[in-house]
Length: 328
Image (cartoon, rainbow, N blue to C red; front, side, top):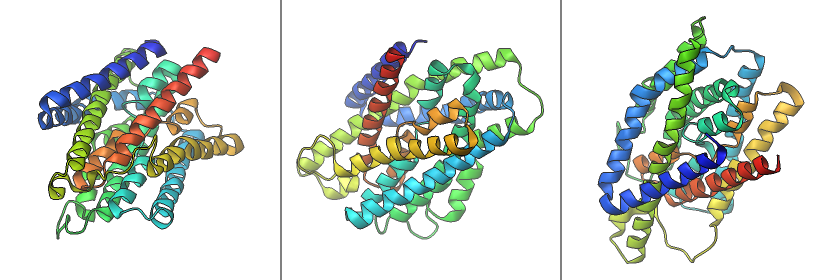
């Protein structure tokens, strides 16, 4: 698959998601979530096992994973401090900005992009980043942020944001255990299985961006309802009408931290000490991810910063990769 075909598939998938949401609304969102659940539970675990089993852990790989956690911690804290202390945003919006910065689309976007731009040899390192960094960040940090910044009264005693529930969700993540098994078993998966796994990675792309289209269309519908004076209890804190801007300040903050600060920190560590694999460096510049939207939905955070950040970061990364490929 060429890079330009990859971009065309992304655009078509987003358009398809928008059209589906406009026609079926909530039913489209339920269907796409069901498709993602199917992929996460049954399709992706063997793919992750195969691809991770063919990489051999060394200091560069371990150092890259530790670097990823350190960088995400830094940009997450900066996002909280600026959004809360400087911008004085509502807590549900602060939580959304943190999610937009720390939850990256290393799976549905990063893996296909790595396969197209860098080739199959770098796919193992990219999968390790996605499964051993993005997965735990979603189930542990993402849920913790959602619970911490949820509107008052949403989580009662024993709610979904308790540490016990987050731990259970983390331990039930099949992608994490598949990646760990792939690293622990001292046998490489056969070459033919790796070839099949790489084609499955391609199949992730349209599924993920159909979900993006559905979520963006649903958010616009909520914004229109809020602007029309719909019941604020129904609309909730997901949207808050403001005057029209090219990009809202909180979204600009998320985009800058996600696409500028985080990649520069990872590249700096690579240049100074670790010489990280290219697959990891490309994952460091992955756009804002769908997992942030899932957490925001669950904890009733403000969706707009995450949805807009997905659009901006995905568009900028895509344009950047295309320009670099043309220039050479």
